[in-house]
Length: 129
Length: 106
Length: 136
Image 1 (cartoon, rainbow over the protein chains, first blue to last red):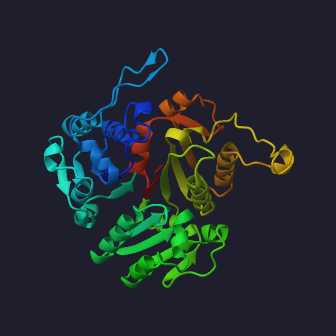
Image 2: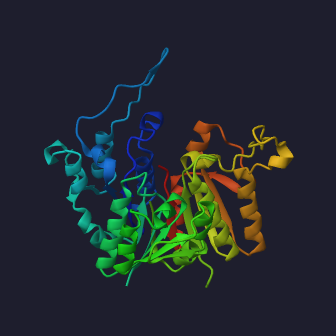
Image 3: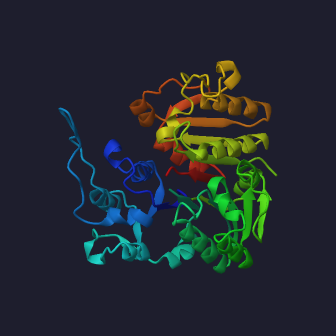
């Protein structure tokens, strides 16, 4: 059985247009496919990934146009529904950013930062991204 | 008992996210874990006695071991450390990893 | 202390972040203690072992190439591998393949190899501990 791995993701919107993915969420999805048992906690600015209805148009440079545009809310839902990776979102960080719970994609689980120590105890490996 | 090593590479002068990490460190200690914070790179800037070092000293008083990377200290000319902070070699990170400490980098 | 297998994930590109100085110090310390190490070089870090890196002079300080002796990460990676051999340890350094492709850095220091997230997953399962050094 794979080691239970908790991944605190705080880096947000770094290179998502260039890579057409959040490279950490992508990595975890790939690792899950390779037999991992991962869970994600979105904290800091990364809580914004759970906001439904986001996504910029593709980049255009001269005659070049991006055709595969990233959408973080779609990728969060994909993690939960298709990869079976639970996704927690830190409540205090949502509140600090004025994000209402009603704005979030379905399936994310709300978590207080005060609950992190108890959550950490459930995982063999805890990583901060 | 679970052991944690929290490596802090950022400083509170440039990043207001450092307060989250200090609080997480305290919360882990309050939950009964043995916790060490290892300051590295600009994280050691908070180790010099200043208006911002009180938060680290308070962490130390709540039972967290606070170490500051000796290389990063020398790189920045920091010789006097705030109360409760001790210089340490980078080898500590390796030894704690080898001993099974849950290790996070911020 | 008994020999352990430690896994590290690196993300920063060469010459861009103090994280790599610290990372190489940690890796060096681990190898000197005789531990086996696995490295998953992801994103910018996939260029750390790129064999076509070249040192340069420093005209601001009036130093030629030899005088400046500018470090290259490819040398540091090679030095880690050599030190591991001397200390009876092993290094399995994997450069994430797609990261390598998009950066065009697909010539590696001998002893490192191309890989994928599946390697990182396998590393974490097989090792005694793992440290992720994220980028900012």
